[in-house]
Image 1 (tube, chains in turn yellow, cyan):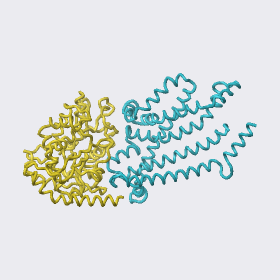
Image 2 (spheres, chains in turn yellow, cyan):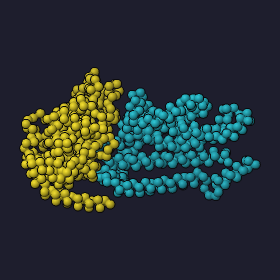
Image 3 (cartoon, helix red, strand yellow):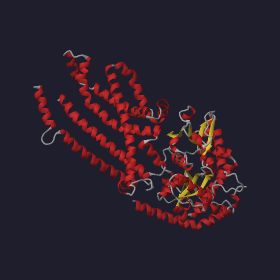
Amino acid sequence: MTAIDRRKFLTGSLIVGGLAVAGPSVLAACASGAGSSTSGLGVASQRLAWIKNSEFAGSYLADKNGYYRDAGFSGSDLISGGPTAPPIESDVLTRTFAGVSQVPIVASAVAQGAPLKIIGAVTQRYAGCVMSMGSKPITKPEDLYGKTIGCASSSEPVWRNFIAALKLDSSRIKTVPVQGDPIGMTTGEIDGYLGFVNAQVVQLRAKGFDIRSMLLADVGFPLVGQTYITTQDNIDTNRAKVKAFLLAEIRGWKDALADPGKAADVTVNEYGKDLGLEYKETLQECVVFNDLIRNGKPKQQIIAVSDEQAAANVALIATGGLTVSADKLFDLGPIREVFREHPDLTLA
Amino acid sequence: MGNQHLGAGVTSVGTPSGPPAIVRAALRTTGTLAGAVAAILIVWSLALRVVNVSPYVAKTPLDVGRYLFVGQAAGSNRADIVANLVLTLGDASLGYAVGLLMAAFISLLFYFSRTTERMFAPTFTALHAIPMVTVAPILCLIFGRGTVGTAVIGAAIVFVPAMLTMLQGLRAVPRTDLDMCQAFGGSAWSCFAKVALPHAVPTWFSAARVAVTTATVGALLAEWLATGAGLGGQMLRDANQFQFARLWSSVVVLTVVCVAIYQLVSLVETAVGSRMSATRR
């Protein structure tokens, strides 16, 4: 059965590989701006890291504004994640073309031989932050000593890596599992919570709490966040499709940067409709998230990761005990080519 | 005459020829265990072939065997899992003991007072229907995340099914037996101690047997939601750190240990049951 699957997969790859030969002409067609969309690349399927909240607004806009079609796909399939979803890496290895995950988890999979690569990152700085109450603020890593910090199990790998990378004494920080709602922080049961600056921080502030946040990336943990992953096989045999996918994502996120109101609107009213999200909160989330996407420098190529960043991320992972080389974890060739072929994508 | 009949019944049911009941039960237990393991291995292997999950995530029995016994790190892998298993079994026995003690106490209370039962039994049952995941944060706030919190979460899972089973055992005494006890001038207490309680012993052992599994689930929940320690905490981290070999191996070890303890309690249950049920023949 496995053998048959593999064979099917190989034939599939051959077919798509054949189509890839047609890829450049497809790209050329959309570069010319004629808008003539071909569906040669199939469906751009993507496994999201979480439920369909504002974190993926750029992908929603890429879908809504037809950027996947413009890039040569017949359409897109955004597959929601969440607490009960299977691992992202598993889905990317078997079902979907691409996925969104975090550097330490991908690195762990790669270290075990999973043929995956990071091909880009939505945020220049990982959105994880230590939240605390204004009355008992945690503003620098040393403030963590003697505190009880709540952490969802999905964030615990990053948290442990952070403690190791900053050479903090883990025996002086008490970490307890808090799955989801950090409301225990407001009652004093925990002193801090490893949340996301674009999620729980915004939500608790909207409820009227005085919340402080210390972004891990701002205190010596320069992890990139929300990385796009795909298989080595896709990169090797299907490079045109990888590039088309990145092109569509970049265009979607450029729209989200230019108009966070629109990003919040499609999140609340279309893609995340079932979640019952608040527009005002979601807009605030998008604004905060945009700040993480930007690196503050002119002529930024969003989603792209520099070689220095890749090396820094690999070094961070190494402090957590995972040794993976930058060229085993990242393949930044496709996104560089996308920006070379589409100079207009570079921000002003 | 009744006694003669009873004696004959015990010999014909208990020991026709060959080994005594307890030995045969032990043999049967071993056989069941082997059968269960074989069935699990077959279903497991087949299921992995049917579902389309990456082999980096879905581990086969062979992968688990390699992780635990063959690979170069097998020794330290085993030591890690055993260290966490000890913690989890400690948490489980805490919930098991507290839960069963509470269940025994409350079921006796309800046995002697129908009014109390009518007042509280529906509430207890309804509370059990609320998923622990939603209650746990509140329990953590009240009881903390240490031993007490763990015991409360474990006991809360064990308590209700055990209490209902125990109460049912006490209530299921044949009316005629109780009538006879009363007719011969037995007090409510002696009727309970001489008739109802002995009659309920097999049912109480069933409750204790089922509680082995529920107590383990309770311990894992407490570790997931409150302490982050033990196998429960480790398994959640494994899933998020792409350590699927360790995750699957932990599940296997936990299942095997759970089944073994369950069978052990069954064995005690058989031994006690064969003695206690003799009074009814």
